[in-house]
Image (cartoon, rainbow, N blue to C red; front, side):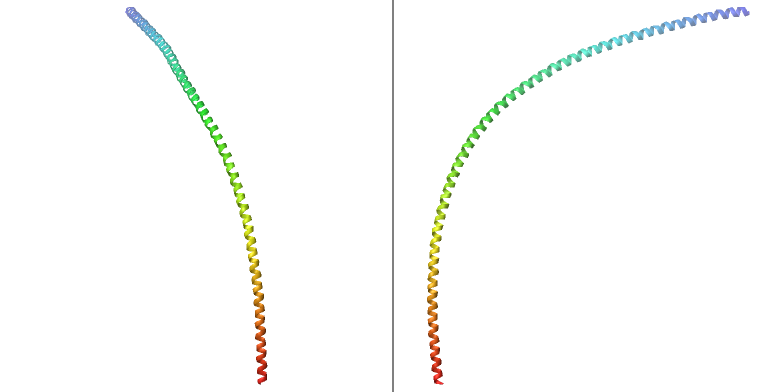
Length: 187
């Protein structure tokens, strides 16, 4: 019986072991399949990512190329606009320089005319001042002569008045002397 149990138990154990080994092998195969599937999916994802990256690079290159051509066109348009503005500015500067030269010539002519007029006015003023001075000299001489005549006349009048006063005073003194003498005689 013990042998039998041992054989039975050994058979069952063997079946169980075989079952377990089969199950482990199946699980290992399944894991291997899953690993292969995961590797396959990873490879596909890597390929897709690689393709996507490649596509994005190509798209980025196309965008950069398009943007580069747009920027170049914009720069060319701006360069043309700048050249146009520069040409317009140069034309305007030439026109302004011409106007400035004309204005400078006109101003120089005005300065010459003004200097001529100032010179004429200075000559006229000198002539008027000289005339006024000579007239003042004549007036001063006449006034001096009139003052001298007035002073002489007043001196003469003063001398005559003095002589007259002295004569009157002498006469008055003589009359007083005469009156005094007559009073002395009467007394």
